[in-house]
Image (cartoon, rainbow, N blue to C red; front, top):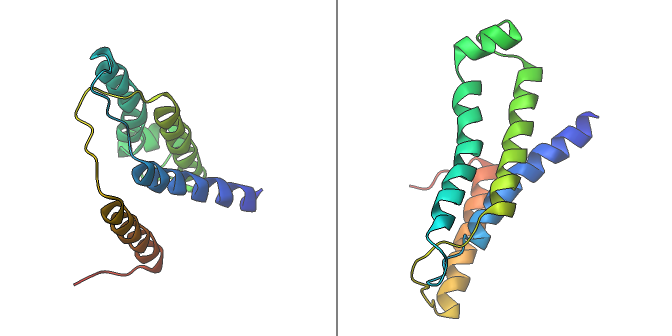
Length: 126
């Protein structure tokens, strides 16, 4: 079970990086209501984070303001599930679509992949 949970947690982290790499969509013809739908999705993602990281919440639910391993696993599970919810139901929002030259997109992708590797290696750049 421990290995399954680790894979789940890494999947969650990778899904955040993947979403940033994939990018959210803009469409000049998208309805303005999509902005409110997306804001609601972000609220579903953010509010549990704000509540679950508070010491009063940890003490009330887990018995200790410092939390526990179980508390951390529940927090990560909720984080992953709500982020997937945002990604799946996120709608394009009105805005300009910028056409970027392919070489620049490729360079940006390389830089992003380098930042992921650096993150896992614990590297800082000067």
